[in-house]
Length: 344
Image (cartoon, rainbow, N blue to C red; front, side):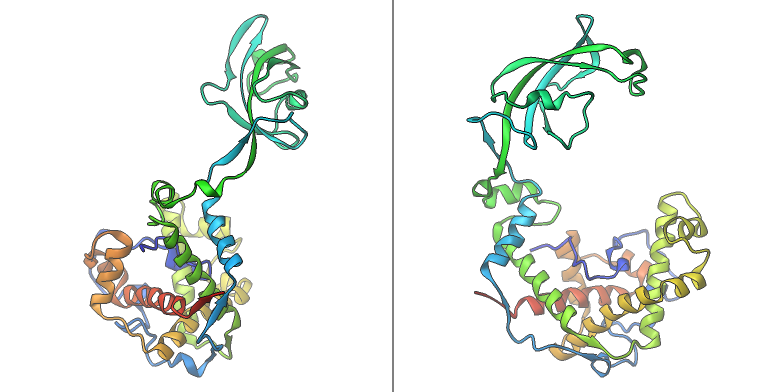
């Protein structure tokens, strides 16, 4: 299963896309302090981390199903209710054409397929949506409203009376999970690399296992090298974001972190830094316990699985081999933890 979605526990820097134009020179900041096997140089993580017993990680079957349905709900169809009248709070699919002085006006139509609105939630002019209450799916009727004055969306309509010839298509019911088979997953979750329900189940197991271990592990001390590397990755992530948004690095820090420089970031976000730095240390501790070390073949496999090609030279030139091994190691740790999951 290709995993293009990483755990929420991963540091911000790990969400960087590993592709770029190659460049050579000194060791990139991403790889400073890292060995080519993904470990921190000179650091034994198990000296600083106490891991829980994860020989068997039990996950209730209903909780696993809940996780799968969470992802399916992104795209899953809803049942279409047609045998009762619309009630307040319903989500309803409607189509309409709006008229002012007998003439249809631009922007006043839903077009083909209609639109979904939720009574009491969706913002429409006047009491448009409340006039749907009591009507049955299939009903066609007039909705009479008056545009506010002024009406900034279209000043020509300000204060004018309008008639919307409206049809209710259906009331949106519960999500129809029965319609979500392997073909549905393959059609809708290409971005995630999922082609079957089992792929989603596997990801949920992986996520559950990793969250269990990370929440249960305890860290006695963060080595300076890990903390410095974490800060460096965060800062590089903001530098990259600044470039993509056409901002300076200082502007990015001020806008998104409300700090003027890295020193102020370290002071204001010290707890956040310690929290973020604990994750790679725990990853390495698990890798040490499992005897995992990254080889170049593992990096090639990681790139093939996640990016469709085993070629990683350009990424190595930009991020350094240590960083590619570091990310690959984290992926291997997640897979190892998933192997300890038992569903009951």
